[in-house]
Length: 122
Image 1 (cartoon, one colour):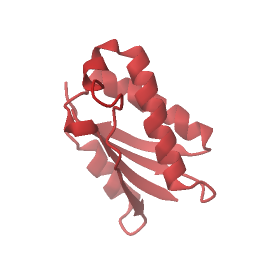
Image 2 (tube, rainbow, N blue to C red):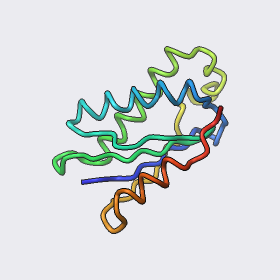
Image 3 (cartoon, one colour):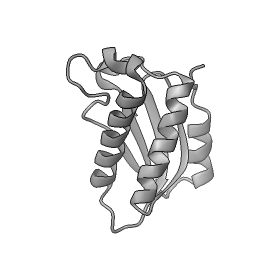
Image 4 (cartoon, rainbow, N blue to C red):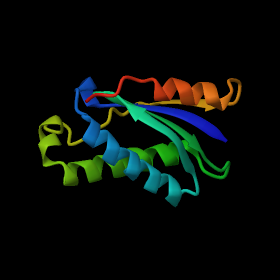
């Protein structure tokens, strides 16, 4: 099964630079591997990220999302102390909500192209 996920930062703060996104992609790949899933495509902007994930049907999307958001928030906070001012109110990087859309109607290449074309910050 494939799912297109979008996570936005808490209060839509413009948090990420390219170096944050590069590290986050690796963190997301590691989390997906723990779930026997594959991160097919990843990209982001200053205040959100897009993921295309191929995952087994035995995995609940909510469980996968909870782990992706929790682990990435914790690791980025540890590895990039400069992000701490974005956590000042709630100690959370991500908004509590997220977008999850199953992918099947549109060819995967179309979804991958959409994610690749997101404007990544410098």
